[in-house]
Length: 86
Image 1 (cartoon, rainbow, N blue to C red):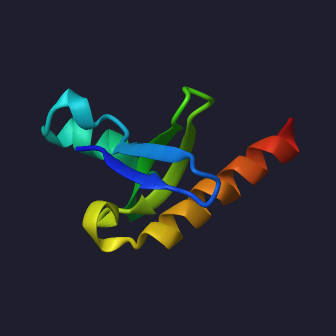
Image 2 (image 1 turned 45 degrees about the vertical axis):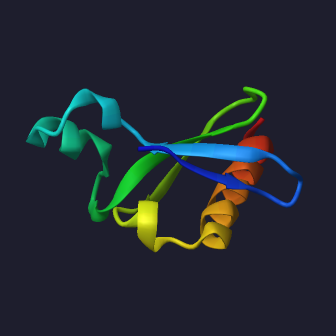
């Protein structure tokens, strides 16, 4: 299930757990987990307009338990990291 949030710039981000559409068997669930951090999962967030997606590592309760501002901070921090690398 995708979660949508809008940032201060009016960009709507659609976030979904990586590998979510592949099923619920143990292998697929493990694929979404962050290696070495069982409590974290990979989440892919795509901005409106189809610009480049970002992958963030979030607690596995991110869909309902992570406040919007915390999710946006993670997204923007990852964007800053990617821009610094290029």
